[in-house]
Amino acid sequence: MEMDFERCYRAVDSRDQRFDGWFYTGVTSTGIYCRPSCPAITPKRQNVRFFPSAAAAQGAGLRACRRCRPDAAPGSPLWDVRADVVGRAMRLIADGVVDRDGVPGLASRLGYTERHLHRMLSAEMGAGPLALARAQRAQTARILIETTDLAMAEIAFAAGFGSVRQFNDTLREVYASAPSDLRTARGRQQAPAGAGTISLRLAYRPPLHARALLDFLAVRALPGVEAVRDGTYHRGLRLPHGTGQVALTPADGHVAATLRLADLRDLAPAVARCRRLLDLDADPAAIDATLAADPALAPAITAEPGIRVPRAVDGFEQAVRAIIGQQVSVTSARTTLTRLLSHRVDHEVDEVDEDRTPGQPHDQWGELRGFLSAEDLLGLPDSGFGMPLGRREALRGLARAVVDGSVDLAAGVDREEAVRRLLALPGIGPWTANYLAMRAFGDPDILLSSDLAVRRGAAALGLPDTPPTLDRYAERWRPWRSYATIRLWRAA
Image (cartoon, rainbow, N blue to C red; front, side, top):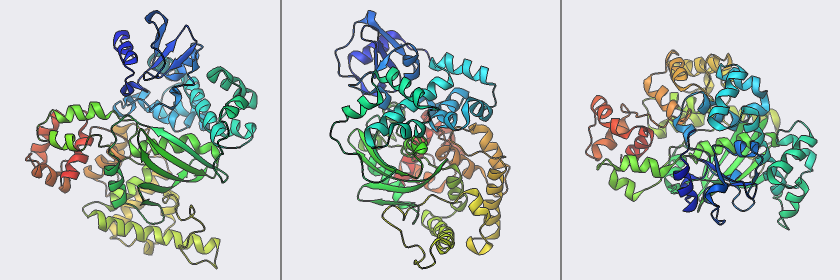
């Protein structure tokens, strides 16, 4: 990643929050690294170095600033735009693939040798995959130290460290403090009640149009999986090591997140998926500036700045939703999905507790559970679907492809290859594949020109409303056509 010194220094001198996460400021005279918006006195030019990642700054022997907490900055929006190997690798590392499968597992997912992958990441990010994962482990450990009363050994393994010694050495190096000192610095703040419950803040680049996000999710919320109540989005999660639940409340400058996890090793992937769901790493200033250059969109952007693309916490879930939502209304799709999930819930509840009324929650968290897995769906009888034969078989074909590995729906997938493989499955057409590219794979440049609501929104704004003409017109919105799609939906 090439960084112009003068531009970066001006961002630091003006404490511009928009650049937090884009790069990190290393101050050689103090031995610390900061986010660009750090409120400390601007360092002298001769004492400043700029780094493309926190891991690169740590590799240069710098420790994280305790004042601005650079490890808590929003992620770089580059990984939304970039669909190359480095972009995919960064998304997979954030999801904890290195912690679970090691560098060989990451390299295998990407189709490159470990050596070549290390070379590409080092050239772009200033650090290899192990160093990038190590920086993430350190941040996860700090969160657990400050928000739980777990023993340090438990935190070490939950954060992904191979040993307590490695955990201690890393935290001393990154934060210039022993783990016990970080807990002491927490003061008298009480850790949240309940085993596995963690509260933290998810930073974003303002502005964030929270109401648009919550409205979108509320209309599509599935009973037993998710709910929007009093300005908070609640949902169940299926995670690599177990289940979880999350409550997300947008606030000024951050989203307050409360997570309850069956296995604390799932903290990093849970945070990554929540950030992805709410599109918190986007750069709304750049997106809105591009779209506002079109006079047809400018008034809507002025009225509603910071519109995000609601993404997905589970690629398979989003694929099932997309197939069921083909050529039907949102309300009709929600009804069909609710029927599908109700059959799964009744079946599992009866096995666990025959005396309890089917669907009755165990507690305030237990009412929300993760969506069906591909294996769950394949285990449903025909009577559990409640839909035409063709659509039912399309769902089963997708589930079989996911189980046998011929279709990958993870966020770090090769987008073009994933779309090609989806289109090869019976019952999946261009609208469905492109909808998944936008919401499950995070492609910021998808225009669903054949979508009826998009065409109605275009007509309402005085734009061309036939797919070919709208496609040609929308070239001016690149590379943010997914955000234009959301705005056209709102206009409809």
